[in-house]
Image (tube, rainbow, N blue to C red; front, side):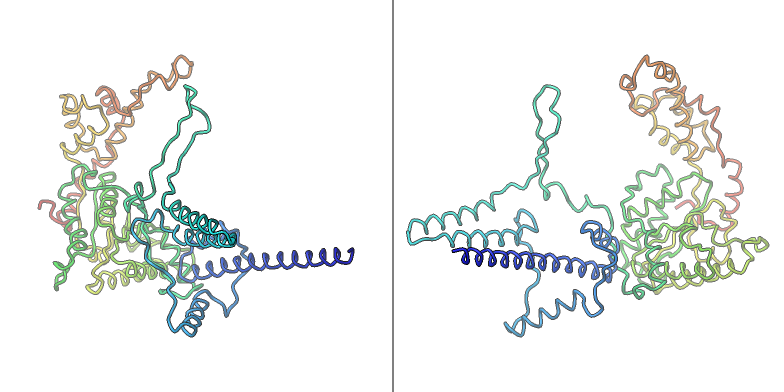
Length: 501
């Protein structure tokens, strides 16, 4: 008796150890699969996804996949084995049928149904009623899956003020989320451009961060005035991308556009509108994006930028304050130094090849406040030069109306204020309204500090309620670019594009 018990105990321990070893082997296999997936994602250039997988799965950075092992090889070997055994290749993916509750629930449903079916079949006895009950249970399980409600119900932790608990029903995924919900642009990987781990690949990752992936949500109507400028930009950038067949001849479309004018007139706002309306890859390049302290690196940055522009075409390269790249003043120390000359030569050569007729889907959009400082060679590559002038009276009125209450829109004081703000830029008018808003809030500071009133007692709609606040602010806020109007007009007459259409 005791011998039997000892044998049973030993057999139980052996079975337990075998079961633990098998579970450990399964966990290790799944862990290795995660490392294989991470290595495959890294090879394909999905660096952000790889980082997210490492963080979520808590993978170790010290473990790497062996040299002769990769996910693609495993899939190829499996397909070869499947073909050798069944004389046909396996079907790895399938299209989701319309009407499914969720995209990823189909496989889980099949697996659960199979397990449920096996469990019910194992309980079948010789009794015929038992078999009928098992079939009914299986049918009920299948119908239950189709009737499940996957909606999310959010119940607040704290009850409402009246003591009742409020349940919020969140809409279903397919009813709430559309293509417009996800505004970020999906970029194709760049692993085919440069070898993995090379210096140019690292530079490409840095330059790719300058791509504007989110929707800036600035449309043409959001830019007050500047009717001629918007039309010229549409003709130079938007229409060639929208109707490429009309610009496929010898003349082609414009490849370089320069926005110039006094500070604060809306040049960057126009560039954001172009990025929103064109729905193309938009590079926002600054000096820190392509300038390096190491010898020769700046030229590599320019090379990689042009390569990425061709890779992601149609592309718009926006360079704000482009006068920092090259300057006409050759006597200046920074422009006559050897690194500056090499950078200038590389920039002009790359732009010349990038904006040639061979690459019809790449446009250079630049902006500057000092167009007279731009090098002539660079100016030649900026074919269309658009003057973004100070806002006229009608535009100033629209800008001011966006910051005041509705009852002040067409008041005589508002019209007079629009006439008196001649020479103010768009940024100056916004600063003027900010100061007017401070004037409107100034009487309540003392009461708030003395705790006589609370912030909740103040009706705040964010709009100016009296023209007198703007008039008082006008005595303190002065235009900053009014004295340079003659200089801009002189350069515009000599080099600019005709403003009237």
